Image (tube, rainbow, N blue to C red; front, side, top):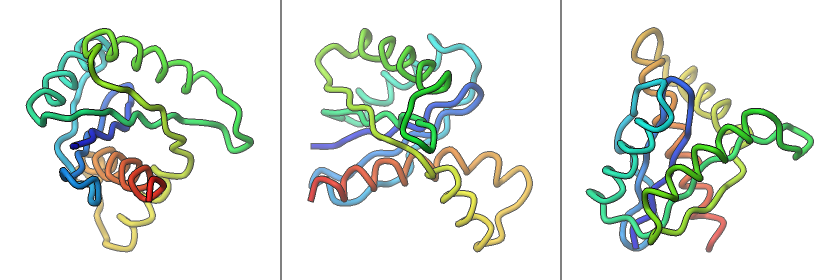
Length: 137
């Protein structure tokens, strides 16, 4: 079954998808927009197009494991997405350090400027999904 991985953000949301064997995550796109409902609609469309059977939504926790404003905001987005896709399982997955890992990777590969800004959320979504896939093995 294909699994969709999401790194939700206020301005940009990264989307990744697994292969059918749930082994490898690949980037799909970055959805741009500040409207939570509009972003949820776009992600729901991508989910249907990719024939995903599950969604893994990165949950931004504080370093001590507690949940703050960002986690609450992400859960609100998840509820909106779940309402649009009631037949698709939605799993929240701890995304601590994924954006930092994506930034470190981009530093190593010398990705800068606009390309970095446009790619970091997509890479973070791939990392979230790949971590989830690896944790299931």
